[in-house]
Length: 206
Image (cartoon, rainbow, N blue to C red):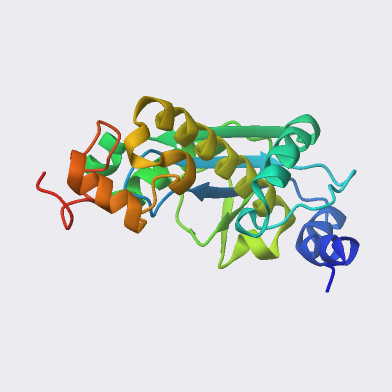
């Protein structure tokens, strides 16, 4: 059954439209890459205008790579504010994944022109305004979904660049996640500089 994208846009933007009607200035925040064995976490903060609402904006995991890339450009052109920050593997290993992710989120949000931040799942951030953590926010809130797309596309581009440097791990395909092929390559070749040492101890000696 073909998806009704107009109906989906009305559904995912319901929370945002209510806030716009109340006159609130708000941002959506999300991240990509907390689970992989390799590469950075990307955290995005975006302030979207009430118009135009961009068709196909949804949880980035539910979209094809081609559609995410197209939406990335449209979001960047349309957004009032958009910023992506990275937490690199060495920071993740030093501070742990949650703290590194939160720091990247805070840096992405620090100059946003708003006083309300809607965040996927995370509720305690040091940002200049109120924070509302929304479980599954990337599927329930248009602004968070837009942030999820920016974060996902940014990180996927980085992993494709890493694939050119370290082709043996298949990063262009697995994006650093612990697939069987990736783990087999990790055991065969050992870690590359971009692997998270705190994540790979079950597979190789670090």
